[in-house]
Image 1 (cartoon, rainbow, N blue to C red):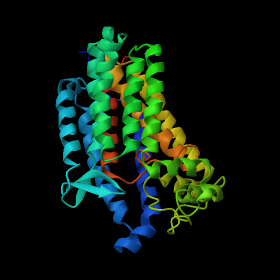
Image 2 (tube, rainbow, N blue to C red):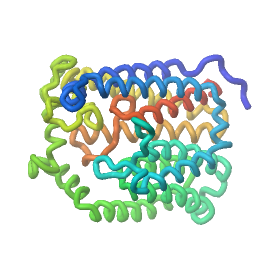
Image 3 (cartoon, one colour):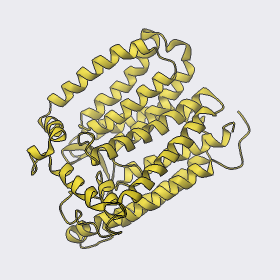
Length: 366
């Protein structure tokens, strides 16, 4: 393997840590009112997020010093472990139900979400498969079907919870990796048509998903039901104006916007820090995207390139969906905003993924 660099991509690392710091501040600001009412502790969510941030940072720096090709060796084991956890989470008494989805496993006073870790495991597995079978990827039967087969098995297991948002992010990321590795566009056209039909079927099979689509088209048709979240989100963003109401001065977090520290934290950030604050966060994510693509393009081998593409693609897809939902550009889904939203599994997973990218940057040919 190529000789390692002395330091990773410091711009990428700095942007990650700045986003994490903003996230910790905003989790406290967004959750203090609700935490005080429910747990009699304004710092309840902030302390837990800080704990997972600490674990995530330690994991990120550890992974940053583990050679990235190690993930190729252990990718099959990682996928197998994630599949076992996805089965366990479906068993009543073992899996925990939250928000109508059986997606969590209890670990003492905390819980983990196996579907989050499945995303990274699938990226590593697919990067290994595609790098070793690049010549076959142009073949529908020998290349495309086997690679998509394992992806849709994982997707089906996640949908049994059900968790359409996480599953969609994973599938979108994996399809992007397959396309970049050299799959034929004609194959994707046919698969895209089938995929759209299947996606429509998933929406029509669940009344609450249909309600989300109709509320996206006209949230004011059901302002106290399916359209409530997006209306309250827009009510938060609008008054923020250019400079915002000031840190900690949000009005929507006073029981108007449900659990504002999770999926809709960007709305609270925009309300308190205004257009300037929201734009600054988007620019930080754009900086991560640029540096991540740069790392992928200059990685020393195909596996490293595909692994970097998958990780940065996962990040980009989550950011676009979350901000799209918060601003009313997309239907409501349960997708967190990386580094900012409250959630131990998603935060830890994303920091580990950043550690992998940082290790690849140590070998990249800049």
